[in-house]
Length: 490
Ligand SMILES: [Zn+2]
Image: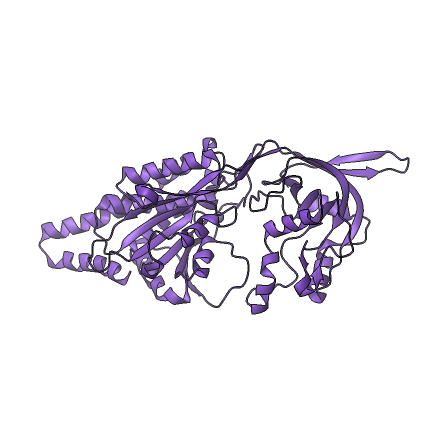
């Protein structure tokens, strides 16, 4: 990257030492590609990619693949070359998905003194969110509170100990009682953090339903279990279920985090959960890969990857999340930079790979697929730069793993010279033993040097995994500057 930046320094330096006509030519090239990035086009592309026809770009769906075709077409139009399988722009892989036909139902049965009952129905998405990988059907059963929903004999810890949850609804929390993700001990706990594990463990204990606390937003990152209904719940149903029990979810967790002793109990509350879903085992998804080849005979085999996830969290029976900030913002920034660089004709020394990743929201599958099937050798990869949720704010932030912290200088210098936004620069040091929650961490865990670009000082409300996250959730002006930053640091 140093040499890439030097290329531009040389262009600038030589510009002032040559004849006027040459100087203008060099400057024009530099300025043309920089100024060709416009917030207007970015806004248009945001509207396209967030359009209802792509139905929330859930990995595995035909709508995701259609959106991927659109993006590949845009790259092709500007001369970004295909870098995927068999001369295509795609790295395809199999990924089953679930269609959620409607929002289902969540009801609490409240017994009255005269033997009758009142039924309280909850609303989505205010109080609950239909499980994005729920089984199909309906269950009415008692709710059993099972803490973190984990069974770990080797850690002498079992939230299900002494309980019979067969045919019942289990209600559980995210995370595990051990919280220090920088402690090597965490490695023993991490596998119990995954939503997939928690759903599978509930099913293994015979549960017919699973209520996931703090879950009234879309979460397709959970295992599908054919006959188990899964629903994410917010504070209201939780409070109703625990009302009169003398127990508080938070207090119980605090105790468990101190003592590492489960505190599970049957709530005595009856609920009805209903889901209307269809499973599609045949689903396919893909990463989208385009490149601009380097021109230096010695350095063109080296590659800089600029990536961000292309998928969003889909449409649950009309609750459609277009994934505007998360992560159309990153995708469109990358596409705008790719277009500017490709159409400028500027000769870069190293190869740049633009990688739009499929399947982040369903468990970081696209980045795992890439690290298992890299298109360029890891040893030749200078860095992987991740962009996720980079479209809301007035400031910029760049962080890098220790192994490539020096590279942040090039962003800093690009910002000082061309962008002039407040910018935070940091190094993410140390080992992380927790559940990875970004594509960057997947690359990092696989031994790639990684960087992360983000925006700071948000000016718009964030609708994380909620229907409000559409093309209006971003500020195209900061997106323009992010695209310019990744363009001109190279
Ligand atoms: Zn994201």
